[in-house]
Length: 228
Image (cartoon, rainbow, N blue to C red; front, side, top):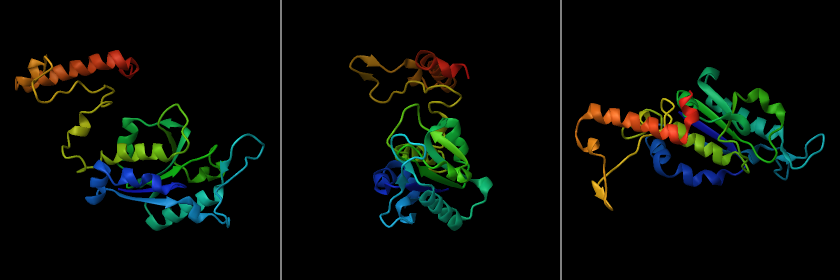
């Protein structure tokens, strides 16, 4: 998979792309990720990428031209079929990112992530956008952090990225359930013992216990998920 990130703060991605699972995916050539500075594409001599909104109002709006030019340049270089790519604007008005969305996007060959800023992006770039995604019902300074979250959620689902292929299938939000409780050594910690069934070696019984625990945790913490 190839992921191109369009942002006015490219250095924000250095740590995320250079650590943990994402770093390993890049080194193993499972994911090629490139960050582009939108300011490099502005025609303004002061590298300005925003302006006041028509109609008045507080704040500034990202100008259409530099975002449009940056995105078109990326698409021209990659030349991936439209059906195999998705151009995504990270925006508070987008649909909330879910595990199902991450799984769907992990099947694409190319993702272009546009990090919105200020009071939003000039609506005239809408023709380039395939979908808008939000990571929650709150407002952040820009789309950089949501883009990082999306990259992590998608990249870890790519074949061969996780050491254990079953790991991604047994996590929270699979089948609309939160993950069951996990334990590791020692068997006793501060007087608290690991549930005996996990030490039994009886795998059908362990699977049944984990499913019941997942149901119980979901019912207690996220009953809305059970309705799905």
